[in-house]
Length: 470
Ligand code: HEM
Image (cartoon, rainbow, N blue to C red):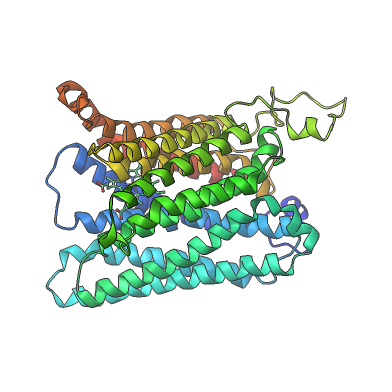
């Protein structure tokens, strides 16, 4: 790190730990998106599904959630939270420990689960399974240290500082609960898988864990960061609206949607449970759409926080980009963020669409896959792609991103990945699936979706590396 960059680190705070981001990018490229692209080719080009396919689906889902998004969230929050709360992390060793445990656990799981389906019935199978249990123990330990560190920051921070985060505290509470339960459930599932000698975790519980992680960790953390950062980066309104009520409605909707479908209650699932699930989906979607409206990221119809506090720009200041506080030195990152929120709105609407379809007795295909990838690739991944190029240069003590051209490339490739991953699934709906040419085109697009995803991640990785080295 240059002496100039070091000088910008507030006294007592640790410099940004970029290795979290490099680890997240490496896992995304070589495991998460890599395996996803491989599976998309097989499905899209109608190749025979090999015996290990279900193991690969679970592996892909897990490394994307914990490795790609989880490590990114951890790295950024361990930098931002100490500054927001004015409490420095005392020892860098904690960061090393979290990174080593989570990234090491994901790497071990990737290796063991990639080999597992090919050694069923051999003596290696048992050994690999217990190694995969070790991977879950490592992940759990890393997540546990992370949560303890975050909770300690909140506990030792001055009340005035924690009060300033009052609006987003419910999202942090959901996140802490979600990380904790999900890591334990993952460990339990792998212990069960090893003791039963099975090549996959129990599918129903695995699905439940995926939904839990998306609903209680990823969406709340994205909402919290958006409320704190986007008004500054995009000159939006401040959080002067009922964020906590929105969080409560979201949580109630999420619980109503997911709990009746959990394997615990599946035996007693009835027409009433189906109705509760549908109502939950609608309530959650209303909360999300209300959030998007109040954040004003797509509508931009409200006065910005600057106008609200009546902060006038200095008269001799060079004019910034229209409606934005920067000069274009981070590229057109705002397009990635607007795209992310547009995909989020679509995800919420599709959640409702499927819930109503269920109520009407229509068996619509790809219920979980379509909505899940709208949330995960459309919203979360596009948000990361946009936030990373706007936020990380500053964390690294740089004033600009290395290439604005690569930001544009990320925008197009990222959106192509979402379009190709998600829209072809709609073509399988009754009525559309009769159009043979459309179906063939959709299959080819689906097959290519992972490659576009990989290219988008490569653009971001190259851009961040060049920025860090500039
Ligand atoms: C364009 C990139 C991607 C491609 C091509 C892709 C492909 C796939 C495929 C083919 C499946 C199996 C679907 C099925 O069950 O029929 C799947 C499942 C899944 N994907 Fe992706 N995916 C991509 C991006 C992502 C991202 C970014 C995330 C998370 C951040 C993610 C998380 C998941 C999860 C959680 C599952 C379900 C795993 C399970 O059932 O255990 N995917 N994906």
